Each structure stands twice: as C-alpha cells, then as structure tokens.
Amino acid sequence: MAQIAFIGLGQMGAPMASNLIKQGHRLSVFDISPAAVSALVAQGATAAASPAQAALDAELVITMLPNGDLVREVLFGAEGVCSTLSPAALVIDMSTIHPLQTDRLIADMQARGFSLMDAPVGRTSDHAQAGTLLILAGGTAEQVQRATPVLMAMGSELINAGGPGMGIRVKLINNYMSIALNALSAEAAVLCEALGLSFDVALQVMSGTPAGKGHFTTTWPNKVLKGDLSPAFMIDLAHKDLGIALDVANQLHVAMPLGAAAREVYSQARASGRGRQDWSAILEQVRVASGLAGKH
Image 1 (cartoon, one colour):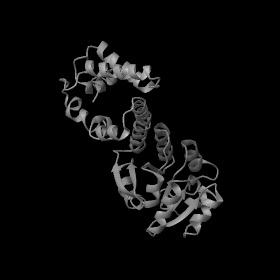
Image 2: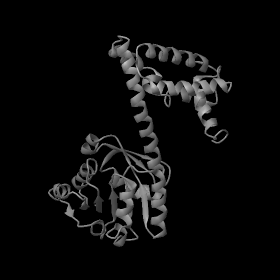
Image 3: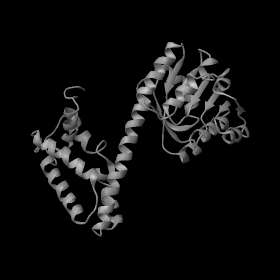
Image 4: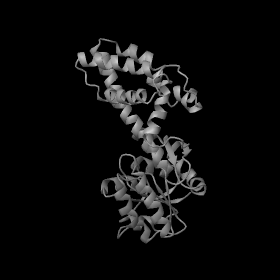
C-alpha cells in the first residue's frame, strides 16, 4: 500500500480520500477546512498543517482543488508540496482546471525535477462516495501504469487519454458538450410543454434517435467520419426543419437561443455549398470555419 498525500477535501475529494483509506492506503491530508481534515483523521488519516507537511515522505501526492491557481499555490507556494517532495514521488492532479494551466504545471514541475500527471474524474459526488468514478488519465505511459492501482481505488473505470494533459482536455470537452446540451435539451422540453406534447412521449422517441443518443455515437461514425457525405438527411432539409421549430417557438413565445444559433451554422453550411450534403457534414463545416480543413 502507498503513502499518499491528499490535498483538497471538498465534495469530491473527501470521499475519494476516504476510499483510499478503505483500500488500505496510508494518507496524510490537508485542507483549509479543519472539519474536513478531522473527518478524515477519524477514518485513519494523518492531519498535515500544510501541503509541504502532507507531501513529506509521500510516494504519491493527489490534488483535488477548485481551480488551477490553487493547484499552483499548493505545489509552488511557500508551504507548498515541492518544498518537501521527493523527486521519486508522483503528483497526480485530479482537479478540473484550464488545460493550458495543466500544461504549464507539468512543464514547471519537470523543470524542477518533479513528475506530475493529470487525472480528472467523470461522474458525480455520489460516484465518488461509491468509489465508481470514471478516471481520465493523462500522463506518460509509465505515470499512468504507476498511478493505476491507486486511481482504481477511487474509480471503477480508467481511460488512458493519450498522454500528458490529455485527461483534462477530454474532461473539458465532455463537460462542454454535456453542459451545453443540458440547455439545448431544456429548450426542447419547454417547446414540448408549450405545444401540449407529453414529455413521456418525447422521451420515448428521442431515447432512440440522435436527439437523445448524440451524434458522436450515431450519425457521425456512419457518415462524416467515414468521409461519406452523401445525404441520408440533407443539410437543406435539416435547415428547413430547424426553421419550422424556431417559428413555432417564436409564435408560442418560447425562447430558443441555442436553436437560433444552431440555425446560423446550418445557414453557413448552405452558403458554403453544403446544402445537399448529409447533415453530419456540419462537422466539416465547423472544421473549415476553424481553420482545420485538411488536418487530421
């Protein structure tokens, strides 16, 4: 079992640390909340007065903090981890922070002779309690291999994201999509209500279509990702249907700003000559608009 410093005992960090203790790991813990520290001490952890004290003699240091500035302060501050960290230790940042901050942290740690990998988590605090988090592991192959036994004490699934900084990148993109989709889904649900349509009927239908399943796993693998833009459902028709939905919403005074923004993307695709291509060609439209055409 490993000697671990765990820094950041919030809603996610506290149950994660608790599961490490349950799996027999030895923990030295630090948090600005004395109550959070006391709760872990009652489970068998050792309290530390600072990140530096927590990291003393640690084989692994885990940070689970609200933002990248705090991670940097915990690592490099006056009472920071690096003032006592062994060069043989591995730091695992499990926070959700800006990926470019992660890149700088990795580089700055390397410049000081230390090792840091990113391993943010997916799922919720309930999964943290149950020890069934999704772990999105960045880092080198050696770092991921070394960290896996400890990471799997907190989660039920680990995905190797493909190198340093890639864990936080896939976490960011997953959150971006799910958070934005939450708002778009709310627009659709309110339109159901305004039209007098049973939400249960909508749920039954959309659970079996790209509306509920998402394009990553339905339309894209069968069309645009294969380089096939022959129309199964044309962009012209998608634009028409989206326009009808927005017109109905307007007449019913239902605000649909995300739907309106999406129509602009379809309008741009039509203006670019994609009207008769498959609607999955929206991916290529956005790639071209972002200057990524021809880059795979």
